[in-house]
Image (cartoon, rainbow, N blue to C red; front, side, top):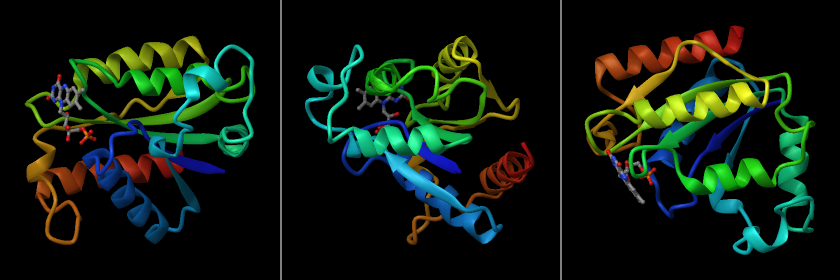
Length: 173
Ligand SMILES: Cc1cc2nc3c(=O)[nH]c(=O)nc-3n(C[C@H](O)[C@H](O)[C@H](O)COP(=O)(O)O)c2cc1C
């Protein structure tokens, strides 16, 4: 099973828009892929699912993560790194069946100039700690608010090209 994780619970996030674009394109390329936005996390996650507890609300999410062999994370830049809710989510997932010896591709997103280069580096370190093997081609999309057309598709030649290359490599990864 392959799952795209949109790494923020911010309503109407650009990262979710990008994750939906990736899902659409990957389905067109014949990959059976699901999408898990962190907006689906239980609101009381820090009380219910951290440190070995498991809630009825989180269990279906855990089931998806356990079944997934290959992840694609869309990760926005928040205060120069990845969102805290993404780390909280990782910490709430069961070990080792969630991420251990699985595979991941990473896409950084920002409204500023850098496309979350540092946050993707930080997150890569955590993936390696968890033995979650990261694909070497990572994409960084800066000024994300200028990247979508009226149908919420990427349209800039360079961005489309690099995203497409990453998707093709992800399918083979
Ligand atoms: C809490 C927070 C912190 C942010 N910090 C940064 C930042 O350090 N650098 C940056 O370029 N954009 C920053 N942004 C803007 C996001 O990169 C921008 O909202 C972009 O659309 C991706 O996030 P989104 O998926 O939530 O929309 C921040 C946004 C939030 C909500």
